[in-house]
Image (cartoon, rainbow, N blue to C red; front, side, top):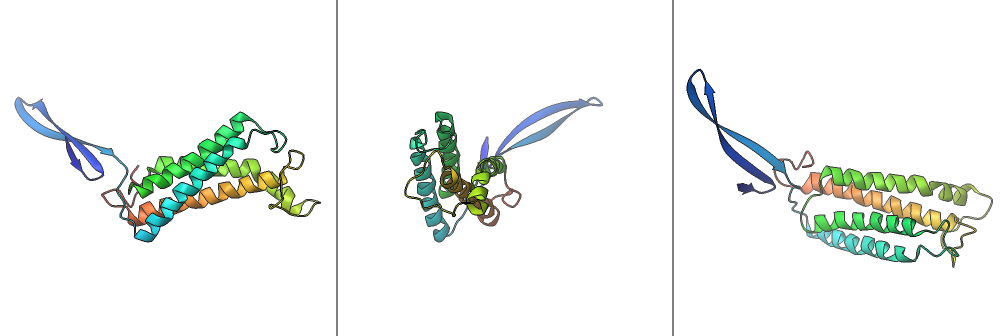
Length: 185
């Protein structure tokens, strides 16, 4: 078993019998691993800050179970948001470790962002176009008026989607190896 950068090649010899003679054929199978990346220092610093930021976002989800503050507060909702932000933090951690995330994982992150935006977008819509004045910096949130909470969640998911898009671009631009330009998944 040989390791060639991002690709692990397994070679084996196969003996065939065709027309009475023996032929040796090397069959090669390639297991695609995430490509390595050579990022400039500025992007490595940014990725490190993004790991910390999204990890903090994940950490702060622990209090989303308070029904006096949060609209439809539940442990499941808090756990899903925690997992969502942890996934985005993990994607940035992979980039920080100079590994390009596989396309399927970037796609999963993008889909999670879009789902969260769809689930919280109505609160932003009401906040912007509703009867009451637009607010996101309210001193405290309440379960009776979910506009602030849903608007913040929408923008959190939007920031995460921008992050996943940046990671996809980093992989295409700075990925090394045979499948860097194609995504390497």
